[in-house]
Length: 123
Image (cartoon, rainbow, N blue to C red; front, side, top):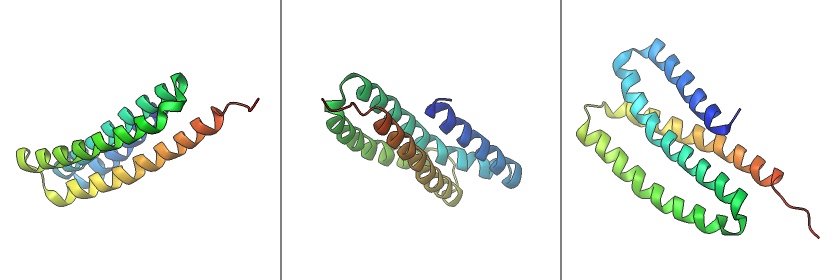
């Protein structure tokens, strides 16, 4: 199973638990908290995996650039959700923080596997 499939599946399953336990309004707020980190992690994973397979020597600069883009993205995303959508801040923030931490932990595990499995033997 691909890392993207795992991350989406894990996020969807946990969100369904929130929906079942907390109701529609809280689940909506948590969903909005989930979507930003999920989009960022999927985008980063696809970019890093592709670059690692094609030109691994440029991976550090790509990851640094992705980090800068994500800083701006998260600032704009959080501000837009809070200002433009009728969202309750506590469930949104709890969802955002929880998914951010969990998804980046999963991505770190997959990056470790990618880098360990992709190492080329020394000549």
